[in-house]
Image (cartoon, rainbow, N blue to C red; front, side, top):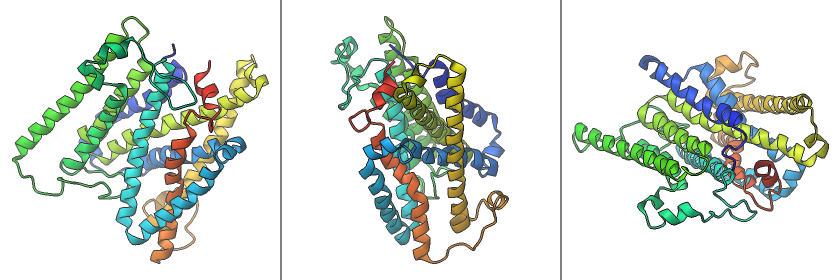
Length: 395
């Protein structure tokens, strides 16, 4: 039984440590710095180099891989066109609703990615069937013990979803948060923009009670996992994934109320694991297809081969991310002029024509939304992804 997706070292250093370090930074920063706008260099490193580049990294798994492209040809050709048309209509009629739809699509995508990694851990642990059909839960002794017990409600999937949806619920119903996903007001504020009906101390007490219940659910799930693992290997990878996800969403949305902390916790926990998964898949697939590379005993040569390819992919992803954000700032925003004009001056003024502006809104946002949709298909363990099993699950 394996308890890690890649290896203990890669999982801890790549999937968990960056997120934990973000928490240390957030607790270390003084309140005066937390309340400031996102510094330019933080935006460059976190948003452009991690968030936007992880979107573009998908092309190495799809459009730039001839075999993968043919497997998903209809999806890869139709998705950008349909996404562009939908985004154009939204941007033309309402910029607020354009960003609102983008925000809720992003929320769904971020939640589903956490769920996807959880499923990878469960398959590695032997808790799920590894088949080409929809993955079905393996019946085991633990299932029978908790079948008629209240613990049946504390499944891994339910607890993971709860760990993310409760902070989102708080975001929608608590007093106004000092951050947004993309655009001011993109998430609905059902109560935050209205006077509080009840005294503030009562409201605070209710939220405190709900926070305690939230923590209690996570701890009860943890106790359940440790109890049922007493006679077998503890699935530390899965446990760390759920606990890190719960802590990250609670700290980023509920505990802290600052744009810096939300951006750090949100982007790092999403972008870095995805880049690692994608680069791992691309390089491991080459080994699966190339028997000579797979049998190569010299680890230094193999390391050099993979490292060279990863650096090239990373460079291209960063370049495309830079060009996308350059166009956003040149044509739409003009908020990062100091950074982008250091490399390349803007050749024209901001767009003013609403029709042309809506076209570029749709064009520039299309890679991100297309990534959301395509991602829902290319990681499924089915006949359209014949290498998933060999790359991620086979020894």
